[in-house]
Length: 106
Image (cartoon, rainbow, N blue to C red; front, side, top):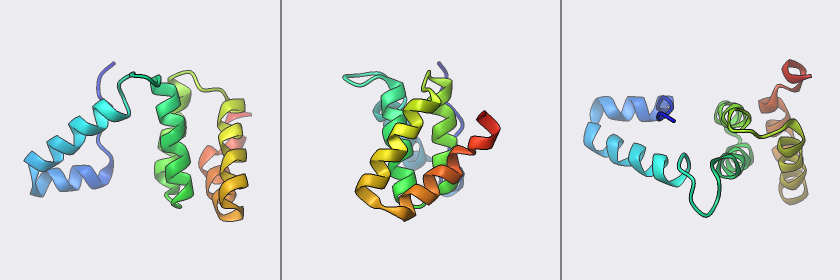
């Protein structure tokens, strides 16, 4: 699978510091987008949870879609939302639910 497009902040960084941006992109590829002890779907579910927990709705939305593209089901994504809520409360729940855009996947 080819590397997905860089997130906007990394594209901006690459315009100003291409060497560092490439280093970050390579780490991202290895850490999140390459299977290891965890499969890519699981890594993307974790990344979705982290972005949602930090209130990064656009990132959470993108990662949820990438998780779906790698085989995650709506049930798995919603279970991540339950974990988020149990550990982080209403703010995490609000971001995660909006990021999933559930009406588009019904």
